[in-house]
Length: 591
Image (cartoon, rainbow, N blue to C red; front, side, top):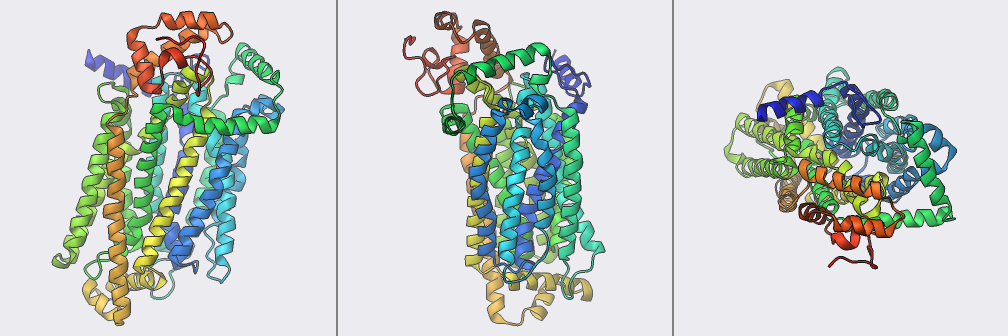
């Protein structure tokens, strides 16, 4: 029996069958929509892995200022992301939204997004370079949000089926996983064919040409999203009439545009009333906090922290990240989809296994760092590679889960609010991601600056690598030859220690917070099915007859009531299908 279920799931996962009315998404359409995350995650990965290094090595910006620049654009973006969410959710009010759909219209902004991303990687080591980079960062993020937030809602718009959403989330996980090794391999390729400045092993033009490749990829993949997705208003004439009728009801409230915006901003805060979403946000924050911090730190950690025993040049560090990621992406994604669909395993257990594996890797990095003086260069290299492989296994286990379960958040909200507000939840998630990313960048930049990491330390590590390659000597011998100033030697040691502490203790602390929240995460395929059945029962009752709604509540089974309350964190009798996330139905409260 179990074997039959397994075959049935994989048949559904890889099926090309598409039925818009029933919400069945063919694998080719799931690929067309989800593959855009190669650009999204790839651009984020390039920023996380290389931007701080690029700004300090080739942009003439010190680490503290560089971290502030990266974070400043994120703080501005935190205000902008909710605006985009509100605009997208309400875009049916405009003729363009009714013609092109309330999500797909925004794909046109892929053009300025790609151009701004390339502009971020132009090497300008002048006194005003920080201002140029700040402007480029802000333009990129503003344009990216105009695509990202509507795109994130597409699984919730296209289907309500858990397995179909799992399929779309799995493809997105596959695309994001494939992007990560590419952001290491593509720069490494350009670094081998483009000349570096004398005495260095890294060319700034390598990162610029990588950005050009990514910008072109973004345009191509956006076209694929447009032709692979659909909007509910275009599924059928009947669905269109229902949407327009609901829109007409909203217009009768005679709300001004400013009142609508204010109401939707309030809705962003009210998403925190949903218990599962609160836990999901913490897990999302922790998962990508771990991944973002790791990718930001690793290249510098590998090149500086193990000196004088070992230094790994940026291109080689990128390959160390890329190969395990590439293998795990193809091997793990379908297995992960099956395990997520299994209610006995689900998101909770996968989170715990993934975070536990990452915590072990952080400990392995710590042991290698503190024992580096007693290790040879080859032993330290083997230890770093092993720890990186372990980290990658844990990263792949946990990394795709938030986006598989995200579309279900709007379903949990709908049992209370009576509306499908996927845009609001996407906006809330983007807000949290930007806030945490900005905060972590500030912390990482401040610690690195305080520890003494700067352009001189980065340049010394690069020159040591070049000397080792040119003269075939050990890293320790090259270190003695290149670093002749005791002040620089102390600075390298201090910077390496500070960066290692970030890798071991800062990332490790985030993992522990995540594991604590994962232990009580209740959403799985079974609980989601019960939820959707209950929503369907309320949809048949409608939203106008309060007496019929109360009568329907009285017919709820104990199991369904318990699951709805566990997922929402709210009392069933007072809040279910009340249309009010704050007060619920105060007229007829079930005791």
